[in-house]
Image 1: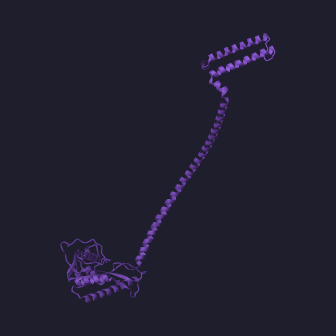
Image 2: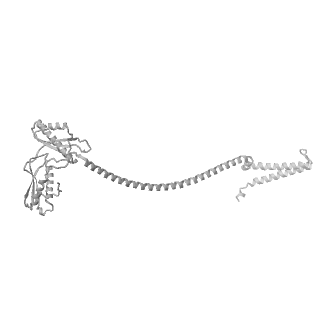
Image 3: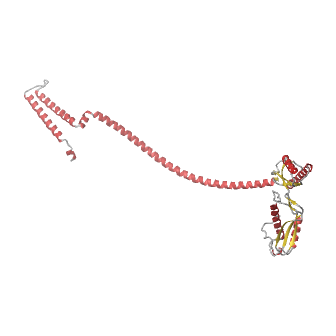
Length: 386
């Protein structure tokens, strides 16, 4: 129905009528010229009629083409632009071929990309597996590193122990001490200072000999002249008693050249305890009912005694923190005496002589058996020290 309604019927009827009219006109002219025996181009009348008929047919065709060209763009294009259309068609075919080639190339690239993607997926899986392997190796290496660190720490501790055992003389060892009374002459000060140096030398030799288990010959022991002058000037200008203490300045190992540097320290020497005075006393309950032995009791007493004298101003040995010594014979004699006491007892530490700031603390131990209603002080829980 769309074909019928869209047809230009007026143009078709016009062409039919025009063609019929031209055909009729040509037939009339041909019949007329043939009847009259008219000749065109010296042709026989029969052929002249045929020629007119042919010309009429040609005019019909020309008329149709002219009319169609006037009224139809497609007819004009078909008649006069066919070469152009063919060229365009050829160009379009060429472009289509290029597009198809590009599409094929694109398809090939897509296939290659898909293959590469699969390969990448495989590589990714392989990398994940490698990562797991590397993480496992990392954990193993970290565990090995931890073990190596522990071994290194053990080696360091062993090395420190070996170095400690190899130290011939430690730093801050008290090598000797003496005291200078007020008003001493410079000559006496120098003589006493020389005696201190000799004491330091002997003590140093004894300490190192005990470490090596062999008797050593003499070796250099150096004092700082500036320190000596400072001490001499301080003693000369002071109205008080002055103590001087000598210490080893640093650690010395057996591999070192045996050259010991000595540091001197000085200060005012005040009397802390007078001869015969009670330094410290403590009540202990009946030994038979106590859970600690007489030896342990005496160790506790001596430990508390040391704390007491340091608090009172006695200078301890900076290396050992000792303030004096009680020889073994006196100690075990005191233990036997204490063991023989079956009652509560007060233990007294009595100064053997005047004791000054620099020490040492020398004592006699005195026991006072008694039965007090209340102890003077609560029993100490401190550990005994030998």
